[in-house]
Image (cartoon, rainbow, N blue to C red):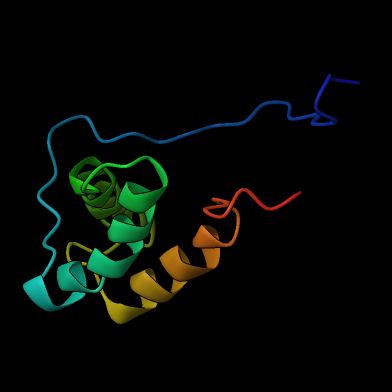
Length: 92
C-alpha cells in the first residue's frame, strides 16, 4: 500500500516524440480569464501565470483526446477539474 492509497502498476504514458501544435482559439482562451483572476486575487497577483498554465492544460486535454485544437468539450472537462483545484481553500 502506498502512502496516498494509490497502487498504480505498469502505468504507461505515451508522450509525443516531437513538438505538437495544438490550437486554442481566442474565444475559449478568454473563458479562462475569470478563473485566472480568482487565482490572482488569492495570491494578490494578476493571474497571468495561472492563465498560461490553464491554457497549457487545455491543450494537453485536447491532445489526450486526440485533437489538434481545443474544443468546448475540452473546456468542460477543464471546468470539472477546477473543482479539485480548491481555489477557496475549502476543506477537502
